[in-house]
Length: 288
Image (cartoon, rainbow, N blue to C red; front, side, top):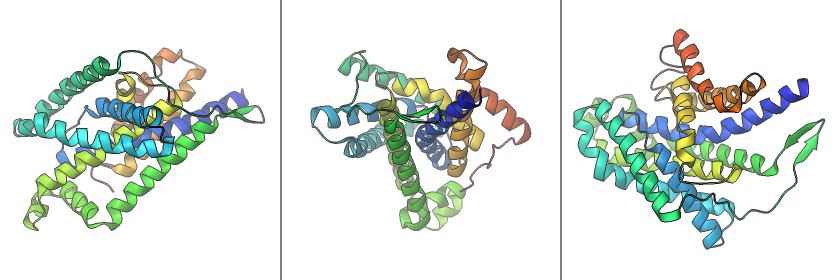
């Protein structure tokens, strides 16, 4: 029982690391634009397929293909926002959130039309699991977690030490004051969309490296991404990381008593528990 518990805990930590990347993208967009953009799901899928093309069709190694996933998903994020969501922002966050759901369904079906419904896998070397004391860890899982950690570290450094990152933080903290100081909110919104959707694409490929990809790759984890962002505190990037580990570990530990088909409900149980005690989430709104 102890070995099983330890195995599930390790699996949860590794799953939380992957979940943290798109959760950060989701909460970063919310922090700047003040609406939940559920199109993160389709952009995670787009990033996964962009990485697949770079890896399989062009022969790039997985780590380089992750950059392609980030860039393609980021560009798609900016373009889709400009064409569809930006003109709806004046109607309020609820309207834009609903439109983002419609957008993710449209983009998902574009991917389905372009690539079909078959499961696709990346061109990766076959590696044997590492085993110790009855525990098993896949090397690719560790590499994925390290890539996720690198992406999160890069984002934190970007926000803390670059002028552009500080502009994004200023708009997230107080849009009116940022405007008075000459910060262009539209430019920052585009940057937030690029970075947020790019991280979603990066995370989508990491999820694909861990399993496989199909047109619903992002949609299947969207509920967990949303739960992680809410549990950590919408608008809080460190909170999204904490929330991702809470949800990831919780989903894995739930397998002790629940059928795997119920694991996605654990994120919403976490939302109910956390918000009952901390209505703004673990780290609260706009905490960096």
